[in-house]
Amino acid sequence: FGVGPGGIWRNKSNDPGGSRTRGLSSYDALYADVLLWLREGWVDYVAPQIYWNIGYNRADYHELVDWWSRHTYGKHLYIGQGAHRINSSHSWKNPSEIPNQIRLNRTYPEVKGSVFYSSKSMIENLNGINDTLRNNLFFTSVSTPKMSWKIKEAPADIVAVIDDIDTAVIRIKLKRLPQPRTPINITYTKIRKEILLSWEKDKTQKKILADTNSYYRVYRFKGKYADHLSEEYLFTETKKLFVMLSRKGSGLFRKKYTFVITSVNRQNMESWPSEAITLKMKE
Image (tube, rainbow, N blue to C red; front, side, top):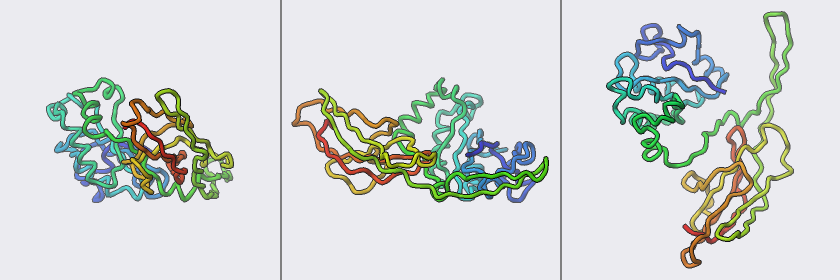
């Protein structure tokens, strides 16, 4: 659960803990004390709408990314990128503005990703932004960052006791969140020029929300299994219990690849890898 507040929490002129900006404050104008919500753990992520360009004198993009990166309180930070601002002014006519913002984001480990506003602007591919992002900055598949606090604690059982019409006392009991079960019975079937690689869900898995598989990750290794998982080996992600692999070309040009499968639940917890299976297929 998260929020996407305005890019400025408070200006330094109003609060010594605020950012060096001069703009509309979400705290003062919208009564949104996002830092309190982060500190108390009431939200899992924040995605501030930093819809200004780098160097803007009233609300510098760099200043705000730096400020938010120092106020995450251990929760996830995703930056709201102003794709709708493209071509709206001299600075936003620069096709490198958003790419430079993304590169700046990546210098801050606290920034876990981006949220682009609006979908209409992205679909219209203003200034070729989609092509630039796809070809130069987002060409590798990655998984959603894990939320460590979600791994330790499951969604709560909440019992409300009403004291009067205006207040409620809430007692919260936390459960231990189980890890997703590893996929089992990894098999393959040759179908003409393709290979059907399939697996099964562990049916001993308890059917509770926190332990329900959301999707599966298929890792591919050249030759033998590398004995560890990382994004560089991620072949694909799917909600199905199979993937189709190409085996076109003669046997001389096929190489050995080893596959393992993991399951991922709604909290982005990943299971242990399945048993490995090695196939010969086209590179």
